[in-house]
Image (tube, rainbow over all chains, first blue to last red; front, side, top):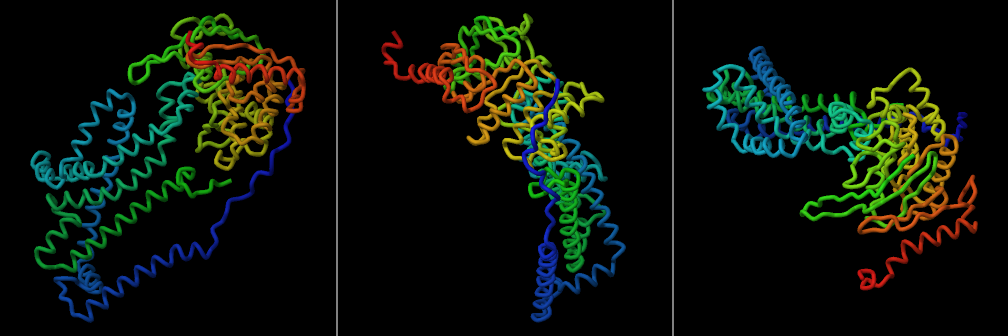
Length: 276
Length: 260
């Protein structure tokens, strides 16, 4: 059989569009300038009106007081980061099989779903002290609370993603006599990637919240613990320092998720142009 | 090659009613014949196609390919859907190779076969592109390659050009004729377009709805190779007119008399 090639339809588009440098600069510079302006304003108001440090400390005071116990604060930060990352990792480990289970059959979904919603209706702050009694005063209840706070949106977005596959592709997979396993691995999971990352972005932020809630209840280290102890002694500038570190941690973790998505799954993030 | 003998398919709808999608359909298709299925919505065209694909089973009657009853999807059948439904994360090449991967039939010749198909549909040079960089017509060409890569002897097409604009549609119809000329196969082609059906097919199966059955099978005698220029041709004209009568004629029948 001879194959005659049809003439090419049109020239393949060349190269990827580069971002103009001016746009890249304003993307970084404008937010930085805005943040600096907010801190300057805050400093200025505190200085001008002589706001007492135990009410609202000036940024300079927050900096000096926090740096004065720098190594201690660093230790607390690492303790919190450990809980956040463990909780986040376990959230993913729990959510993926749950999402697969939920989408496997309507019967299983009907059985599992009420429990999921039920875990969400329990206030985690109220659950925390009970978990400490049950699981002991160690890292375990903190990770469990973090997972309980973070996993739900992840399960929902993963399940939505697994169900978002066009029915034709499932028919194609059946027509290829593919196993349920290859259907999941080669079609459903890749299709779910954009949804999974949407869930991961929510879950990573909630992990920070969960870890702090756990530390409020039961901890001898961590930024949540630092906030409780420092406010008890009216060391409000240190509490503010811990708060700022927590927010930076949340932003950095969120950005790491965004970057992982852009680097490994460029077709997933909407605005990315695939490299040629 | 394909033989349907008094095939009936009944679906249970959600409110418990039974809907007869196909009733008593008998059809026999020769090897390398091009057969178009035409009819209004709800006449069971897609159901018929899916029965031949082995994706659904008949409620009564038998469907067989080469004398073997169809009980499950068969690996020598290729399917093209209305939407290209390419994998957005995979390149054109990987999309074309996808059925072979799913069937665990990848070997050293697979990439060459896929490249030859991509060339055949006029997409040479686009192998490493992602589907989102392609137009709708180009994506559907990739979907046709995907349906042909495992060298099926039967090609099932469910309104493959239905989502394309009118100009691309005509272009793709001619492309399909060219590809079919190069790689003869038994083709079952579902469409809403009478012109498309008559230009493409050896025989046009006209179906009527509720319940879906075959109204008439029309031979299209206009000679090949064909193009849209045959629209002025007598054989073409007669076939189109007859199909129109069958589809629209029924609608003007007095409902009281139709029931009687």
